[in-house]
Amino acid sequence: MRDLTVTPIRWEHSGDGEFPYHAEVDGRSLTVRVNDFPAEPLYTLLVDGAELVDLDDWPPVWRRPPVPSHLLDLVARPVTTDLLWTWARRICGVTTEHAAEVAALLGLPAPTQDDFGRLFVQPSPPGTAWLQLCMNERAGLSTVEIRFAEPALTRAELDACFGPSQELPRVHWDSPYLIAHAVRTLEAPLSCTLFASFTGQPGPAERAFQVTLRRDHH
Image (cartoon, rainbow, N blue to C red; front, side):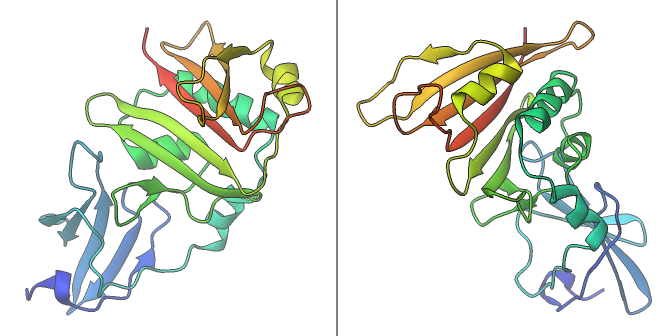
């Protein structure tokens, strides 16, 4: 077949997190697979089920489909302390290194890669500027980072859900103020630490502008 990476293709969503896009070209069935980035290239193009080429970027001539309504429903929930608690406990049990599967475990659609190789859930949940999955080449999921559009959850709300927090030392005079919560479950092989970032001294009423969930190995 001609070079499909320079061929304008209108893709459709498949609903599958690992194989999210499909199309028909010249009677051949095309599928895009999302790989274990960054250990592997982000995408692989398959033709009639056979691997054709690995891709580190989405070809500019390809038309990515709009996010279907059933996937939009997955990111329709605002990020509350209860949702963060659920995500933190699920992160403790994450064993897959596949970004799309990690997103599915959190009840989110598969992330998409930007021009710098970062993985973002699109659209981001209500009230957030972005939600990023950070993947480690050796260990899989590293962190889930949520930046709020406006400072949202207070330290008191986080403490009420996760227990007393620990204030961390600032590394520079203009660094954000950080608090940390440890999350562990008896049945999970790993643990998770929630970090909340504040612009000012984190008193009970101070609101966090970012929350990071880090997967920890014992």
